[in-house]
Image (cartoon, helix red, strand yellow):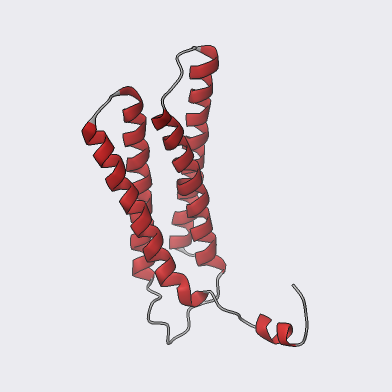
Amino acid sequence: MFTTVRYFIKTSVIFLIVGILTGLYMSFSKYLLNIGYSQELISAHTHLILVGSVMMMIMGVALWFFPRADKEDKRYNPDLILISYWLMTIGTSLRFIFQVSANFVISEILKTLIALSSILQVVAMIFFFYSMWGRIRPVGSQYREAKGEKF
């Protein structure tokens, strides 16, 4: 497993742990302290787990398992993959921080920052899958399928 894959997978696990702890806080806040929480905290919790943890795990595993890029593949670029990692990590982290802050403070600036951090997440996914597109191809299975084998 090479370095960039480890970055994606380990960061995914960190986001999952922080997301689970956020859910624990939400549970205590609502059921034990009776103070509740806002929609912003629900969104922060959801995005951290679904985008930060699940999506980054998918990206890391795809990078690890998909067939190596063809020599003619002009889109695959390990530097672009690393850029997408940093954009996703920074975008997800900032979105989480801004949305948790918005749970406690009403601010128009925070709303703008949440939207901008969301853009980083979207750009990261576009960069990643643009670069990975050529690696989504058959490697041997097309021959077995042609012989009638079912998967």
